[in-house]
Length: 640
Image (cartoon, rainbow, N blue to C red):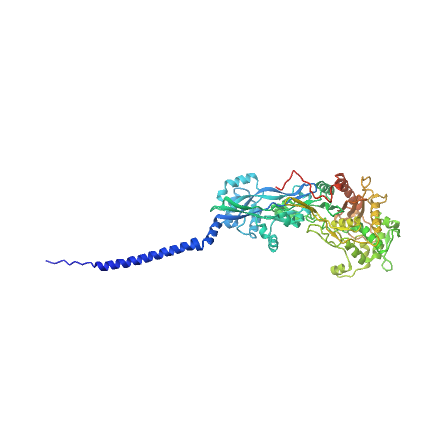
């Protein structure tokens, strides 16, 4: 019988093995606990600030708040440029996985044109992807309701309520007030270069032309901000704090709405400009360029079709003819030339010449005849007659004797060939010709024959209507020079302040009585029976003075007659008029420039008469108290 064998356990060895394993396990567990505690220490204490910030960034968003843009008002407090609430559909590109699919789905809910999609895609290339970009502006109430129902389907797409610029008078004030448009790449670069980009974090539009652009920094205001708590869908749960934006500065003009409306009405289909200025301080009372266009088209982004119509028009409606229209000043500058000749001692008040209807340059072989507008001539002509009847022969001879150097120097003192200082960027210097100018422009010397046409404001000489207004005001003020300006006051933080009048060094004559001689001659132009503006101002209830001008746009042969019916419309004479009133104590200077309209006395002067009639009829002559610092208030409007 086999005996079974038994294994006897070594309890001591097993106990040692268990102890070793326990120690190793405890060491491993302890190490893990230390690692966990260390990590907790790192997360909760050492890196608390960093992770707290990252947590808040996911939970708390800082959103910029757009400031209300300052409004622009006329002399009566009527709003010319204000703000109105609008709704826009905006997309944050960063939060859209498939942009084309999202745009297509949105198009199934509300109508989105191909052009709007194209403009949107082009715009997001130049803007930061985490910022909302408008896909469609000025949503209707129906479109807002339709999209709101489907809002939950679109992460990163929302309807935003904003204040948008609005011009209640449409195209009446476009070239002066200007307009705002969407910020483009060029605008962004300019803002970045000037350190203003941060202040435009919530802004979609910026001033493009006119006052809107010139005073952009004042009108815009200062952007505010708010801290909000959001959920994982970036939907705002509550507002934590807010820094209110600062509203932009309000601007006040001396322009009267009724006067501007009248200017547009009487201009009709004529192309040209009407500008009226307070001769005492340079404040612009009327600032109208025709043709014009509606600035509201640009506020939310103009369509390509509309823009093409405007930019492609042969009438150039985007040209600001008040400050950029370069016209031969024609006979409107004869008072300045006569004044120069008086100051130089070349003539006196009683100087007389014989006008047979033509004039020749003395002592040259080529005997070209420079003709007078009156074929049979004016006979014996003195200084007074030369201005009131606008005798060309008198000024051919005067220009020849003065020479281009004297004319150019004196004309520059009256502001010709230079910027006037008017508060819009869209301004041309036009041309005050000189020997140096011709040499630089044409690489030719100056000939005596060039000077003759300059004597009647033709040839190379061009001027803008605002320059003519400024030069006429200098005559009225007997040498004192005030710069023209649109903005006459501002309201900032509820406080009104009149803007300062800008002066230049005055023109000083050897004899102050020469001013009176010239101004009296301009008075005779309007009141004398043989004055060229007599018919236009017949029976006026106020006194005024002025000078007519007719600018010929192409040359005629010596024996060729001008027949308006045989001339293409674009080559017909320009009609010009400059004037001021009342004669005894002037408060207004007016300039009318009509393209291809005909004679200044028969076409431009009657328009000036209508503007002056309304000016005195409305009592505007006494409305502008230059010492008043309290602006008028239009209680029917606000800042939106």
